[in-house]
Image 1 (cartoon, rainbow, N blue to C red):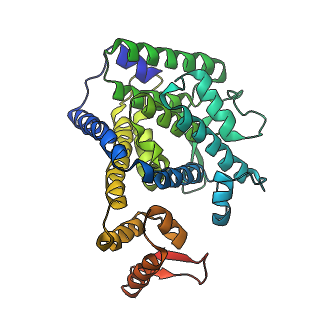
Image 2 (tube, rainbow, N blue to C red; image 1 turned 90 degrees about the vertical axis):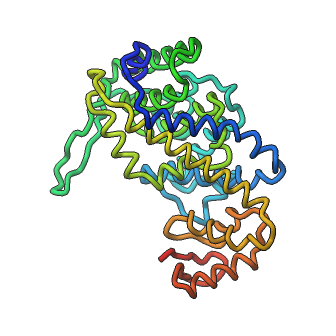
Image 3 (cartoon, helix red, strand yellow; image 1 turned 90 degrees about the horizontal axis):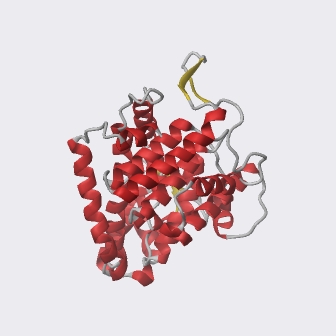
Length: 346
Protein backbone atom coordinates (compact mmCIF):
# COMPACT_ATOMS: atom_id res chain seq x y z
CA UNK A 1 0.00 0.00 0.00
CA UNK A 2 2.76 2.48 0.93
CA UNK A 3 4.55 2.11 -2.43
CA UNK A 4 1.32 2.27 -4.43
CA UNK A 5 0.19 5.30 -2.40
CA UNK A 6 3.46 7.11 -3.08
CA UNK A 7 3.10 6.41 -6.80
CA UNK A 8 -0.46 7.70 -6.68
CA UNK A 9 0.71 10.90 -5.00
CA UNK A 10 3.57 11.43 -7.44
CA UNK A 11 6.26 11.09 -4.76
CA UNK A 12 8.78 9.21 -6.89
CA UNK A 13 11.16 10.16 -9.65
CA UNK A 14 11.78 7.03 -11.72
CA UNK A 15 15.53 6.29 -12.06
CA UNK A 16 16.92 6.06 -15.59
CA UNK A 17 17.95 2.36 -15.25
CA UNK A 18 14.33 1.49 -14.37
CA UNK A 19 13.14 3.35 -17.47
CA UNK A 20 15.62 1.40 -19.57
CA UNK A 21 14.29 -1.87 -18.15
CA UNK A 22 10.72 -0.78 -18.91
CA UNK A 23 11.74 -0.08 -22.51
CA UNK A 24 13.29 -3.53 -22.81
CA UNK A 25 10.17 -5.22 -21.42
CA UNK A 26 7.92 -3.29 -23.79
CA UNK A 27 10.08 -4.45 -26.69
CA UNK A 28 9.85 -8.07 -25.56
CA UNK A 29 6.09 -7.75 -25.15
CA UNK A 30 5.95 -6.57 -28.76
CA UNK A 31 7.88 -9.66 -29.93
CA UNK A 32 5.79 -12.03 -27.82
CA UNK A 33 3.10 -12.69 -30.43
CA UNK A 34 5.76 -13.37 -33.04
CA UNK A 35 7.33 -16.06 -30.83
CA UNK A 36 4.03 -17.81 -30.14
CA UNK A 37 2.76 -17.59 -33.72
CA UNK A 38 5.81 -19.23 -35.26
CA UNK A 39 5.59 -22.59 -33.51
CA UNK A 40 2.29 -22.78 -31.58
CA UNK A 41 2.02 -26.55 -31.94
CA UNK A 42 5.41 -27.10 -30.32
CA UNK A 43 5.07 -24.85 -27.27
CA UNK A 44 3.19 -27.42 -25.17
CA UNK A 45 6.51 -28.93 -24.01
CA UNK A 46 7.65 -25.52 -22.76
CA UNK A 47 4.35 -24.99 -20.93
CA UNK A 48 4.60 -28.39 -19.25
CA UNK A 49 8.20 -27.81 -18.23
CA UNK A 50 7.43 -24.34 -16.83
CA UNK A 51 4.57 -25.73 -14.75
CA UNK A 52 6.84 -28.35 -13.16
CA UNK A 53 9.68 -25.90 -12.51
CA UNK A 54 7.38 -23.26 -11.04
CA UNK A 55 5.68 -25.62 -8.59
CA UNK A 56 9.02 -27.06 -7.44
CA UNK A 57 11.11 -23.87 -7.33
CA UNK A 58 8.58 -21.67 -5.53
CA UNK A 59 8.18 -24.24 -2.77
CA UNK A 60 11.90 -25.04 -2.62
CA UNK A 61 12.68 -21.36 -1.95
CA UNK A 62 10.62 -21.78 1.24
CA UNK A 63 12.37 -25.02 2.21
CA UNK A 64 9.61 -27.34 0.93
CA UNK A 65 11.15 -30.26 -0.99
CA UNK A 66 9.80 -33.46 -2.50
CA UNK A 67 11.48 -36.52 -4.05
CA UNK A 68 12.43 -35.97 -7.69
CA UNK A 69 10.68 -39.17 -8.79
CA UNK A 70 7.41 -37.87 -7.31
CA UNK A 71 7.46 -34.49 -9.06
CA UNK A 72 5.53 -35.26 -12.25
CA UNK A 73 2.97 -37.38 -10.41
CA UNK A 74 2.26 -34.44 -8.10
CA UNK A 75 2.18 -31.79 -10.81
CA UNK A 76 0.21 -33.71 -13.45
CA UNK A 77 -1.31 -36.71 -11.68
CA UNK A 78 -3.89 -37.38 -9.01
CA UNK A 79 -1.72 -39.44 -6.65
CA UNK A 80 -2.49 -39.30 -2.95
CA UNK A 81 -0.14 -36.98 -1.10
CA UNK A 82 2.36 -38.76 1.09
CA UNK A 83 3.16 -35.81 3.35
CA UNK A 84 2.62 -32.10 3.92
CA UNK A 85 5.35 -31.07 1.44
CA UNK A 86 3.69 -33.00 -1.38
CA UNK A 87 0.36 -31.41 -0.54
CA UNK A 88 1.85 -27.93 -0.83
CA UNK A 89 3.54 -28.64 -4.18
CA UNK A 90 0.30 -30.07 -5.60
CA UNK A 91 -1.63 -27.09 -4.21
CA UNK A 92 0.74 -24.62 -5.85
CA UNK A 93 0.20 -26.42 -9.13
CA UNK A 94 -3.58 -25.93 -8.74
CA UNK A 95 -3.04 -22.20 -8.23
CA UNK A 96 -0.81 -22.06 -11.33
CA UNK A 97 -3.46 -23.90 -13.36
CA UNK A 98 -6.05 -21.34 -12.27
CA UNK A 99 -3.87 -18.40 -13.34
CA UNK A 100 -2.76 -19.94 -16.64
CA UNK A 101 -6.29 -20.99 -17.59
CA UNK A 102 -7.92 -17.66 -16.72
CA UNK A 103 -5.06 -15.28 -17.57
CA UNK A 104 -6.01 -11.62 -17.49
CA UNK A 105 -9.69 -12.57 -17.12
CA UNK A 106 -8.98 -13.53 -13.51
CA UNK A 107 -9.62 -10.38 -11.50
CA UNK A 108 -6.61 -8.79 -9.81
CA UNK A 109 -8.24 -8.55 -6.39
CA UNK A 110 -8.20 -9.45 -2.72
CA UNK A 111 -10.50 -12.38 -3.49
CA UNK A 112 -8.06 -13.84 -6.04
CA UNK A 113 -5.13 -13.38 -3.64
CA UNK A 114 -6.96 -15.25 -0.86
CA UNK A 115 -7.84 -17.98 -3.32
CA UNK A 116 -4.16 -18.37 -4.27
CA UNK A 117 -3.28 -18.80 -0.62
CA UNK A 118 -6.08 -21.29 -0.07
CA UNK A 119 -5.01 -23.43 -3.03
CA UNK A 120 -1.27 -23.30 -2.37
CA UNK A 121 -1.56 -24.10 1.34
CA UNK A 122 -3.81 -27.14 0.94
CA UNK A 123 -5.76 -28.61 3.84
CA UNK A 124 -4.21 -26.54 6.61
CA UNK A 125 -6.44 -24.72 9.10
CA UNK A 126 -5.67 -21.14 8.03
CA UNK A 127 -5.52 -21.62 4.24
CA UNK A 128 -7.08 -18.56 2.63
CA UNK A 129 -7.23 -16.67 5.94
CA UNK A 130 -5.32 -13.63 7.12
CA UNK A 131 -2.88 -13.96 10.03
CA UNK A 132 -4.36 -13.65 13.52
CA UNK A 133 -1.07 -12.93 15.29
CA UNK A 134 1.89 -10.62 14.48
CA UNK A 135 4.34 -12.18 12.04
CA UNK A 136 7.78 -10.61 11.89
CA UNK A 137 10.62 -11.37 9.49
CA UNK A 138 13.30 -12.91 11.69
CA UNK A 139 16.96 -13.36 10.74
CA UNK A 140 19.18 -15.92 12.48
CA UNK A 141 22.60 -14.37 13.10
CA UNK A 142 25.84 -16.43 12.86
CA UNK A 143 26.02 -16.59 16.68
CA UNK A 144 22.53 -18.13 16.81
CA UNK A 145 20.74 -14.98 18.02
CA UNK A 146 17.40 -14.05 16.43
CA UNK A 147 17.17 -10.57 14.95
CA UNK A 148 13.91 -8.96 13.76
CA UNK A 149 14.74 -7.73 10.26
CA UNK A 150 11.27 -6.36 9.50
CA UNK A 151 8.06 -5.92 11.48
CA UNK A 152 5.07 -6.57 9.24
CA UNK A 153 1.65 -4.93 9.49
CA UNK A 154 -0.34 -5.88 12.59
CA UNK A 155 -3.20 -8.41 12.12
CA UNK A 156 -6.02 -5.95 12.81
CA UNK A 157 -4.77 -3.61 10.07
CA UNK A 158 -3.92 -6.30 7.50
CA UNK A 159 -7.32 -6.75 5.74
CA UNK A 160 -7.81 -2.99 5.33
CA UNK A 161 -4.31 -2.44 3.94
CA UNK A 162 -4.67 -5.27 1.43
CA UNK A 163 -8.06 -3.94 0.31
CA UNK A 164 -6.60 -0.46 -0.10
CA UNK A 165 -3.66 -1.86 -2.08
CA UNK A 166 -5.92 -3.50 -4.66
CA UNK A 167 -8.18 -0.42 -4.76
CA UNK A 168 -5.26 1.91 -5.48
CA UNK A 169 -3.88 -0.55 -8.02
CA UNK A 170 -7.20 -0.62 -9.85
CA UNK A 171 -7.49 3.19 -9.79
CA UNK A 172 -4.00 3.68 -11.20
CA UNK A 173 -4.54 1.10 -13.95
CA UNK A 174 -7.72 2.91 -14.97
CA UNK A 175 -6.45 6.50 -15.06
CA UNK A 176 -3.07 5.65 -16.69
CA UNK A 177 -1.16 8.30 -14.73
CA UNK A 178 1.55 5.81 -13.77
CA UNK A 179 3.45 3.44 -16.07
CA UNK A 180 1.62 0.11 -15.48
CA UNK A 181 4.83 -1.91 -15.18
CA UNK A 182 5.76 0.13 -12.09
CA UNK A 183 2.49 -1.00 -10.50
CA UNK A 184 3.52 -4.63 -10.97
CA UNK A 185 6.56 -4.15 -8.73
CA UNK A 186 4.83 -1.80 -6.30
CA UNK A 187 1.97 -4.21 -5.58
CA UNK A 188 4.38 -7.10 -5.04
CA UNK A 189 6.59 -5.10 -2.68
CA UNK A 190 3.62 -3.83 -0.66
CA UNK A 191 2.21 -7.35 -0.39
CA UNK A 192 5.47 -8.70 1.04
CA UNK A 193 5.76 -5.80 3.51
CA UNK A 194 2.17 -6.22 4.70
CA UNK A 195 2.93 -9.98 5.01
CA UNK A 196 -0.77 -10.84 5.31
CA UNK A 197 -0.54 -14.56 6.13
CA UNK A 198 0.93 -16.65 8.91
CA UNK A 199 2.81 -18.68 6.32
CA UNK A 200 2.98 -18.91 2.53
CA UNK A 201 3.53 -15.21 1.80
CA UNK A 202 6.50 -15.78 -0.51
CA UNK A 203 4.64 -18.30 -2.63
CA UNK A 204 1.54 -16.11 -2.93
CA UNK A 205 3.73 -13.15 -3.90
CA UNK A 206 5.08 -15.17 -6.84
CA UNK A 207 1.58 -16.23 -7.89
CA UNK A 208 0.50 -12.60 -7.65
CA UNK A 209 3.48 -11.60 -9.81
CA UNK A 210 2.44 -14.12 -12.48
CA UNK A 211 -1.16 -12.92 -12.45
CA UNK A 212 -0.12 -9.26 -12.64
CA UNK A 213 2.11 -10.08 -15.62
CA UNK A 214 -0.90 -11.53 -17.43
CA UNK A 215 -2.91 -8.36 -16.74
CA UNK A 216 -0.13 -6.28 -18.27
CA UNK A 217 0.21 -8.49 -21.35
CA UNK A 218 3.44 -10.18 -20.26
CA UNK A 219 2.61 -13.84 -20.94
CA UNK A 220 6.14 -15.22 -20.70
CA UNK A 221 5.39 -16.99 -17.39
CA UNK A 222 3.25 -19.46 -19.32
CA UNK A 223 6.37 -20.80 -21.09
CA UNK A 224 9.30 -19.99 -18.79
CA UNK A 225 9.21 -20.40 -15.00
CA UNK A 226 9.60 -17.04 -13.26
CA UNK A 227 9.92 -18.95 -9.99
CA UNK A 228 12.97 -20.85 -11.23
CA UNK A 229 14.71 -17.62 -12.21
CA UNK A 230 13.92 -16.16 -8.79
CA UNK A 231 15.35 -19.29 -7.15
CA UNK A 232 18.52 -19.06 -9.24
CA UNK A 233 18.90 -15.44 -8.06
CA UNK A 234 17.63 -16.01 -4.54
CA UNK A 235 20.35 -14.02 -2.77
CA UNK A 236 19.57 -10.97 -4.91
CA UNK A 237 15.88 -11.42 -4.14
CA UNK A 238 16.44 -11.24 -0.37
CA UNK A 239 18.98 -8.44 -0.70
CA UNK A 240 16.76 -6.15 -2.79
CA UNK A 241 13.70 -6.89 -0.66
CA UNK A 242 15.61 -5.91 2.46
CA UNK A 243 16.83 -2.68 0.83
CA UNK A 244 13.37 -1.70 -0.41
CA UNK A 245 11.47 -2.55 2.78
CA UNK A 246 13.60 -0.30 4.98
CA UNK A 247 11.43 2.67 6.01
CA UNK A 248 8.31 1.19 4.37
CA UNK A 249 6.01 1.82 7.35
CA UNK A 250 6.82 5.54 7.20
CA UNK A 251 6.52 5.66 3.41
CA UNK A 252 10.17 6.70 3.18
CA UNK A 253 11.51 3.55 1.57
CA UNK A 254 13.37 3.14 -1.74
CA UNK A 255 11.29 0.77 -3.92
CA UNK A 256 13.64 0.69 -6.88
CA UNK A 257 16.03 -2.12 -5.87
CA UNK A 258 13.18 -4.62 -5.58
CA UNK A 259 11.21 -3.31 -8.57
CA UNK A 260 14.39 -3.44 -10.64
CA UNK A 261 14.93 -7.02 -9.49
CA UNK A 262 11.47 -8.10 -10.65
CA UNK A 263 12.05 -6.44 -14.02
CA UNK A 264 15.35 -8.34 -14.27
CA UNK A 265 13.53 -11.64 -13.59
CA UNK A 266 10.93 -11.01 -16.30
CA UNK A 267 13.61 -9.89 -18.78
CA UNK A 268 15.62 -13.05 -18.14
CA UNK A 269 12.49 -15.10 -18.77
CA UNK A 270 11.93 -13.36 -22.11
CA UNK A 271 15.57 -13.86 -23.12
CA UNK A 272 15.26 -17.56 -22.38
CA UNK A 273 11.91 -17.78 -24.16
CA UNK A 274 13.38 -16.20 -27.30
CA UNK A 275 16.31 -18.61 -27.13
CA UNK A 276 14.11 -21.65 -26.53
CA UNK A 277 11.81 -20.82 -29.45
CA UNK A 278 14.93 -20.68 -31.60
CA UNK A 279 16.01 -24.05 -30.21
CA UNK A 280 12.68 -25.65 -31.10
CA UNK A 281 13.20 -24.55 -34.70
CA UNK A 282 16.88 -25.55 -34.87
CA UNK A 283 17.97 -27.88 -37.67
CA UNK A 284 19.47 -31.20 -36.60
CA UNK A 285 23.04 -29.97 -36.98
CA UNK A 286 22.54 -27.38 -34.24
CA UNK A 287 20.94 -29.64 -31.65
CA UNK A 288 24.20 -30.37 -29.83
CA UNK A 289 24.40 -26.69 -28.88
CA UNK A 290 20.78 -26.84 -27.74
CA UNK A 291 21.60 -29.70 -25.36
CA UNK A 292 24.66 -27.91 -23.98
CA UNK A 293 22.60 -24.80 -23.27
CA UNK A 294 19.99 -26.95 -21.51
CA UNK A 295 22.72 -28.42 -19.28
CA UNK A 296 23.93 -24.91 -18.44
CA UNK A 297 20.43 -23.94 -17.32
CA UNK A 298 20.12 -26.84 -14.86
CA UNK A 299 20.71 -26.67 -11.14
CA UNK A 300 23.82 -28.41 -9.76
CA UNK A 301 22.26 -31.86 -10.31
CA UNK A 302 19.89 -33.08 -13.00
CA UNK A 303 18.66 -36.19 -14.84
CA UNK A 304 18.55 -37.12 -18.51
CA UNK A 305 14.77 -36.66 -18.31
CA UNK A 306 15.28 -33.01 -17.31
CA UNK A 307 17.40 -32.38 -20.41
CA UNK A 308 14.91 -34.19 -22.63
CA UNK A 309 12.05 -32.03 -21.32
CA UNK A 310 14.16 -28.91 -21.91
CA UNK A 311 14.93 -29.89 -25.52
CA UNK A 312 11.68 -30.53 -27.42
CA UNK A 313 12.38 -32.36 -30.66
CA UNK A 314 15.85 -33.65 -29.66
CA UNK A 315 16.34 -37.42 -29.57
CA UNK A 316 17.38 -39.28 -26.41
CA UNK A 317 20.38 -40.92 -28.16
CA UNK A 318 21.89 -37.56 -29.11
CA UNK A 319 21.33 -36.26 -25.56
CA UNK A 320 23.24 -39.23 -24.13
CA UNK A 321 26.07 -38.77 -26.63
CA UNK A 322 26.46 -35.11 -25.69
CA UNK A 323 26.37 -35.86 -21.95
CA UNK A 324 29.05 -38.49 -22.41
CA UNK A 325 31.20 -35.98 -24.26
CA UNK A 326 30.71 -33.34 -21.57
CA UNK A 327 31.71 -35.92 -18.96
CA UNK A 328 34.97 -36.62 -20.81
CA UNK A 329 35.64 -32.87 -20.82
CA UNK A 330 35.09 -32.78 -17.01
CA UNK A 331 32.15 -30.38 -17.34
CA UNK A 332 29.70 -32.83 -15.75
CA UNK A 333 29.93 -36.24 -14.10
CA UNK A 334 27.53 -39.15 -13.72
CA UNK A 335 26.50 -40.00 -10.15
CA UNK A 336 24.97 -43.40 -10.91
CA UNK A 337 23.61 -45.71 -13.59
CA UNK A 338 20.19 -46.45 -15.01
CA UNK A 339 17.26 -44.28 -16.10
CA UNK A 340 17.03 -42.37 -12.83
CA UNK A 341 20.75 -41.62 -12.52
CA UNK A 342 21.72 -38.09 -11.56
CA UNK A 343 24.36 -35.96 -13.22
CA UNK A 344 26.32 -33.23 -11.47
CA UNK A 345 27.76 -30.03 -12.94
CA UNK A 346 31.43 -29.50 -12.08
